[in-house]
Length: 193
Image (cartoon, rainbow, N blue to C red):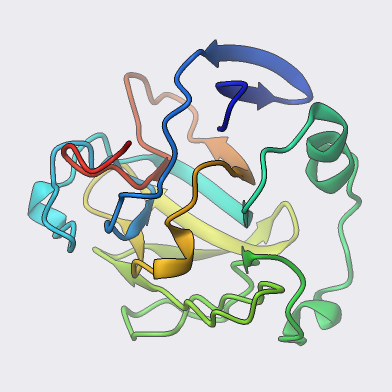
């Protein structure tokens, strides 16, 4: 998102565009992965106020403070080869925020979803509603959701109040699922610019 609007790429193909240039500079909401928080606006996004739960797996979630051209998206996610799982235990920051999803278990403990981003925010999240570990995701482990209440909550960080940025991640929708499903949400019930 940014001055050029929003773009959505799936498997290296631009599949959707929106002219909206609204950023996140006025958005105090947490980041929700695996559900939509479109109508919350409560700075918490409690599970009972979420909807459109995702059924599938996610892995390697990256949050940028600049919009990403297609070449960056392709290089950083689509053309990336799986890395050694031993490398993912390193918590050296590598991006603004980067949640590799390489965990051994998910039980709702605060801080279990580790942020290894370059900015050093240490904005760790937690699983909610019974999300589980997929040990064979795109890059080692990932999180599995079943379309019920499972999601990941990453607390709001003032450093995310930015006018432009980008998000990339791998996902795989469960076979046989249909309808609208939230993947990445920082919705705010009117807080966006």
